[in-house]
Picture 1: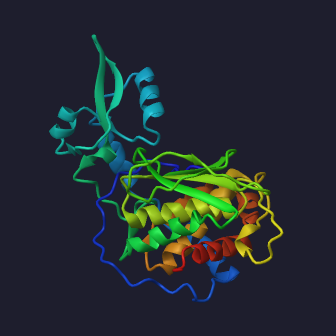
Picture 2: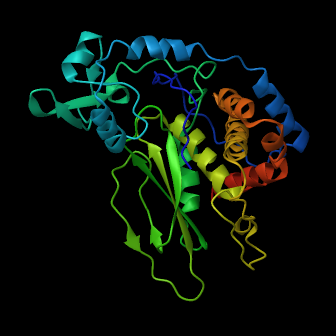
Length: 322
């Protein structure tokens, strides 16, 4: 599943944040009424003005030919605005030293290099009140590290690898299922070291891969990670059944037939609750609103708030200190 908006928005200037003490995960779980109240709150959220701001910004960039648009799309999923170094400098942006260039065809020449908005500084303002990917509040990066560590515990039958990836500013992350017995042991913010095979005996160990936009702040990565885990634990990628009664996080139903908008609402409700309980303010209301308005009554009614709460509980158990 890709965490993509239904509209374009600008990249963000990281919000000021200071380390916070780890939040105890023993706090009461949200009730179904609380989850439904969040859905109602989403519908009262106004459409952000960031849409028109982005259009005005992107209009200053050169128009790309159709084939070049395809080249940008294949090399940098989620790209918003792209330009050469000189074009970015002309509008007050500087390309980061570690930015990976995007190759496109050049007029009267072979190729030229362009760079995506997310690879420039200063970063654009990202306010959760107007940007669905915005996250504000104090956040301890160790919370993210604990969750990633819990997902790759070799003692579990469940294996979820997390790594950073070069995505454009309109793609925060994605989750995919793996047919191989693989592991991904890369910590957030570190270069990927590749995949290695897991030796197994008896019951196969299922594996999933989550990729996060490496330009995001730790708080934004946390919000995206729990969104993708919401897809997994709500059964959007298929069911997972085992007979180990001591492993409560091991079972969830197969709900791949659920509609797209219903899946996105459920996953973002998980993210919203997780961020709320971590003391973070996120742009989840904006994200959910777009899908609720596009879904209609039947897909919204198909949202299973009980599974949302169960998914949140699994995430908090996996991310608890051990």
